[in-house]
Length: 336
Image 1 (cartoon, rainbow, N blue to C red):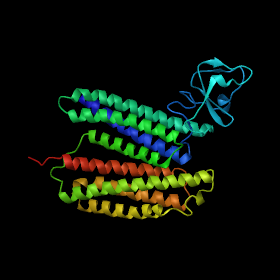
Image 2 (tube, helix red, strand yellow):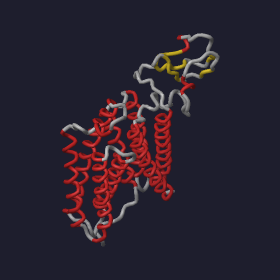
Image 3 (cartoon, helix red, strand yellow):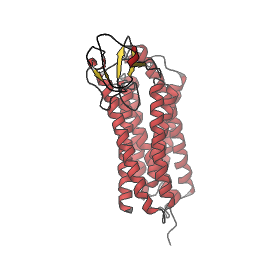
Image 4 (cartoon, rainbow, N blue to C red):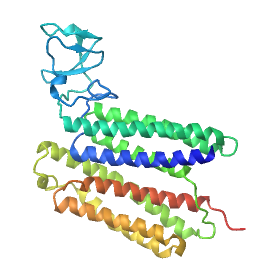
């Protein structure tokens, strides 16, 4: 049972990272409102591919909760019925959580696949938590943390719903991203650890914690810059990406310059690390360089396809490696 538990920890971590990648792709393509309701998508478990499905017409059968777009508004079916010759408002309730009522099949399916991956990740963490019950007598903290992850996934799903209801409010998107990092961090804490008792030293621990703290600040600033870009993209209706950062806020320049501090701290960590840890820190440093390069590409090449996703995914991979190193250092025991 212990082996199955660690297997599901790894599967859950991979799936959560896939959800992060899918979420980044959702933002990159502007598909965040592809499904304007939650947890279903236009009231369907499997969303439509054609706009005609969401239009009222006589002689059509509807099921309770299914959605149509009429007069640029969303209407929700009240019960199962077949439409008559004219629209009967008694069969419908106006959707009031927001006023967004646009169907784009591409955006809908991008967002739907993101939610589908989220559901799979949630199921995986639940299985992980169930297997953790067998470790209650030996590692209670693992069992408690595993169930904490399940609760965290539920909270994350609720945050996702509030993001939709708020029509992609920037601060809610930021909370959604930070919660994803918390879940990744918790899963990393459940991952089997390497004993570094003979390698740990106060300086390495200090700079490792500092690097993670600086990264957290950078991620928060990055999400706020991204919110500004989203707003500019909305103004230009997704066109003219060369204008999105033409007159950026001061926070953009701070975010850009802050990457230098991150690189320097990580380079110093690599310098002072023992040979056994240099490979891991070199990978982390390389990912940081890749993140910086992707940021340069975003700014100077006007947001080419995939660059935004790469920028975010690389940052989350860096977070995972840094947090894993800190966990290994703090839980190691000196050799006997």
